Image 1: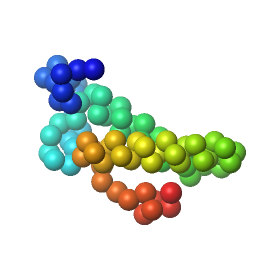
Image 2: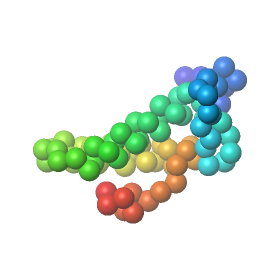
Image 3: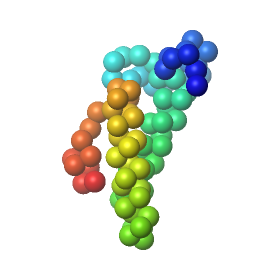
Image 4: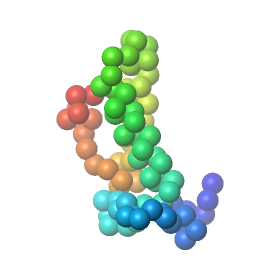
Amino acid sequence: MTGGPRDAGERSTGTAPSIDLLGAEMTPSEERLLAVYEELKALCSEDLPPIAHANVRAALALMHNVVNGLALRYEHLSDLGV
C-alpha cells in the first residue's frame, strides 16, 4: 500500500490526463480501478451463464462503491439497468 491515494510518484503519463469529479488528475491506480468498473459494466450487458451474471453484478456493486467513494465516477447502477 502506498502513502496515500495521490502519491506524487503516481501521476498519469498519458497524453491527456484523466480528471476525477473533484478536478484532480487520476493516478494510474485510479485509472485502472475505473477501467475494471467499466469492464464489469460491459460484462453485465452480455449474455452470461446465470452464475457468472450474478457474480459479475455483485462485483460491479463493490466496484461502484470504490469509484464512487474515490469520486472517479458518479452514477446510479439502477440507471444502467443493473
